[in-house]
Image 1 (cartoon, one colour):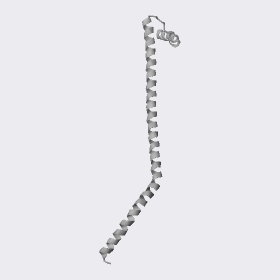
Image 2 (cartoon, one colour; image 1 turned 180 degrees about the vertical axis):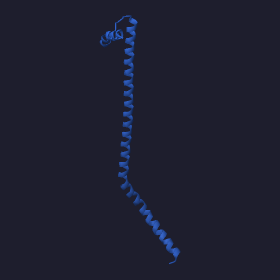
Image 3 (tube, rainbow, N blue to C red; image 1 turned 90 degrees about the vertical axis):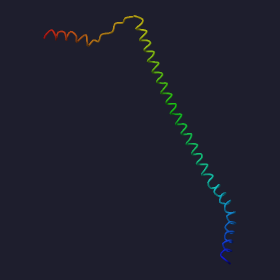
Length: 115
């Protein structure tokens, strides 16, 4: 047998066996890798849901913060409105004098007089 005849025979055997082995390898890989790919798909789906949940929680926290800010602004506006209404009503209310200042005033005057 010449080397070229041996090479042709070997090529035929290899190609013939590959026509059978390639589909068998494909089926085996599909059976072996399908559960792994499904698990990876579920993991990514869950991870995507977690990311969406985190994003929604951040948005909700921002909206709550804005709501509290609006509530504070409304309260401040209400207080200012009440203050302006009291100013414009013209009712004069005497402010209470602190007792400490009134009690110390005579002492301070007597201390100045003694000098």
